[in-house]
Image (cartoon, rainbow, N blue to C red):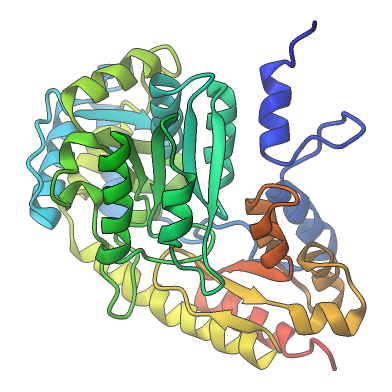
Amino acid sequence: MTSTPRWRQVAAATGLLAPSGAVGQTIFAEMTVLANRTGAINLGQGFPDVDGPDYVKEAAKAAIDAGRNQYAPGDGVPELRRAVAEHQHRHYGLDVDPDTEVLVATGATEALTAAILALTGPGDEVITLEPFYDSHAAAIAMAGATHVPVPLTADLRLDAAALRAAATDRTRLILVNTPHNPTGTVLTRAELEDVAAVARERDTVVLTDEVYEHLVYDDATHVPMATLPGMAERTLTVSSSGKTFSLTGWKVGWLHGPAELVTAVRTVKQFMTYTSGSAFQPAIALALADDETPRALAASLAARRDLLREGLEAAGFDVVVPRGTYFVVADGAAHVARLGLEDGHDLCLRLPELAGVVGVPVSAFCRQGSTAARALRSRVRFTFVKRPEVLRDAVGRLATLGR
């Protein structure tokens, strides 16, 4: 019997494998091509259109000029590992050993992937929330593990009963993404306690994706899983500098947790990139001591969120107000019905023509045909991490929808 190549398993897990066997492009690539072809404003892909702080960029230039252009240590430069540990203590009261409990990676994506590859394999199950960020599903498929998504509720909250029902003796990891992409949900302490209870009962490691940790709004508070009682010893925490400091292309991320788990991840990660960003790492170490820049960015993004939210509501979308991240989820059911469309994907294909704006269907973050995909079939994700003038232009265009 011929086995299925791993790349096909990854394509299938991320919705890229067509029934014909052909491999398509990601929804982000599809919508970006559409935006470029039509001249529509691209609110589909979430990256800032303004760079991060000048002093951080200057620090990277200085590191280049100082000759820090060869391999960095495989676990990261010492000053960045210390900065991560100090950041976690300053913000969350966590005591992290920078020498044995911190690992620098090529962005959060590599840290998450290396952790999943290190700790799971065929026969193991990995629980995620659904919708889920696409790289989570891809990494689980690469490991040969079984992906067990747990749908969020209709109002995009954790379904504790569904989580408990999904956990089995084969559950090796529970992957928690908060603040959550694509929905903007920020899990509460009570919701995280429900996750922790399941993890303790099943003796399971929790892997957390916390890249939007500082981008929370209103009265929301980011609570790291590792701060909950009894969870530091079974939690691997992942974050990165890209979202916090608007430097997504630098790809400087990190992971921390118990030394034995970090060692396991390092064992795999060293054969992936080994190391990267030698000149960027000391610059990010400097940035992590800066609490004002993330606060200012969060305040600015909250205002931009409200600008886009109000525009979407005026255009006939039903919006769930996000408490974190770069994204707002809007239900386009009224437009889908009025236009005789099938779902949110069809609506996204028509939006450039109808309103000159591009979004991404939330169903792209679900397994094809899943309960969550059906429940969220008319919802669209838009990003608000764009300059206010770009968002005002987008809102003006959306106002023409349905006229």
